[in-house]
Image 1 (cartoon, rainbow, N blue to C red):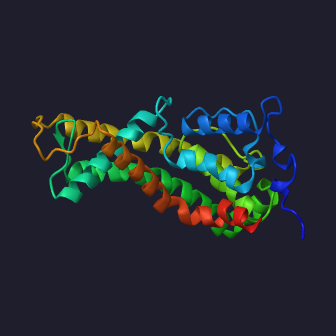
Image 2 (image 1 turned 90 degrees about the horizontal axis):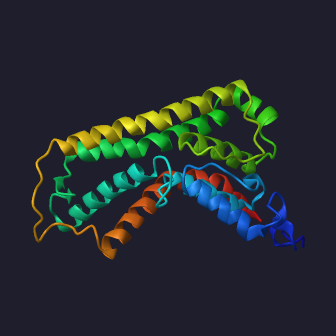
Length: 256
């Protein structure tokens, strides 16, 4: 029975920074994709299937690592608004955050923000394989590794572009008319549409009068809320991206 390549001695060193080893390479990759840094010190396309999925998940979370540059702060604040709303549903009370009521308008704007990036990522990936003319060009020109890993390469490209990250699976040739156009659209809409919704949400909250905290107000400075916020971030990502991940990196990783 053949031994899977990732289990061979040194088999996972392809594409890694040999000065720092596997740990240093994957740590750098995780920190750069958890923020909108986009820098790399190793080839993410050479990671194991499940290892390559982790940078994708980091970006799919919205690059919300504490201290991250770019849009991580307001991405986390949007998730906090949704977490407060979920908490309010659990106790049957109108949710409040920072002294402001979270009503239908605020939740609609937060929901639109959450939907922008997944729509761009999933639509771009689907069109790359769902349109016959585009698919033939993608498979013949852009994808280095056929099969499910090729899907992962395309998925990573749209995830990185829509989230304004800048890193890439090095095996994908993106210098084609389709990818030059589609990834540019993903970058444009993925950056400016969320900003519009965030500013609209901020304006709707600023227009409200502050309400005093009461016994029914959900505390947002305790470990309970931190856990609720982390759960919302993971669940929103899992429900949105899990199906496509099962077709790409998960299918590849479980097949080894």
